[in-house]
Image (tube, rainbow, N blue to C red; front, side, top):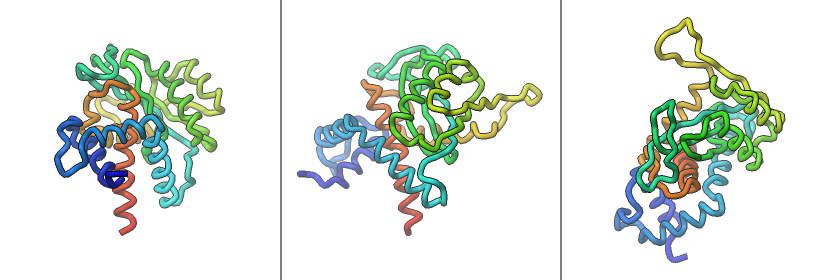
Length: 234
């Protein structure tokens, strides 16, 4: 390997955080074609998702929890796409043309799985994609309960979860309270979306492939967890 692995990883994290173009990587990093080649190779092998899983498990164990969660939260986020964006569907509810990031997180907001699809796909249809991928990743042996908002209160969502023996609990807003409300459990996944968009590469969808968007989502979480673990070990 011509370039040290740490240099490659630093370059990819820099691009994730700053949102710069591949060709605009500063000169102190390896040449951008080399960096992109490693990024694409690891994307194809799902390395970033696997690294996120290992770091999440390390953090959970450090916090005195089981490595894998027994409860989770699901939600989606619609994001505008650039001209080269991976999807250009229209979310009529949010009035956004672009992609939808659908994530499942544990009770600490750590990412279990992420699926990126067109913004035109309804949340209750995208939920099955999330459930299928989460089960395929193998971190759901202990999972029993999934919290969700009102849009997931559909028989198809309940059936998709029941296929894996999971229960979906819908947390709705109360009509008695007006304005902003902090809803139990649902704020956890909203905080995760905030963590993700601290990385400028994820503020909009600039990628040609949905798999690239998913890779950057996992990279953003890996960057967060590596920082936490490094500080905890000081």
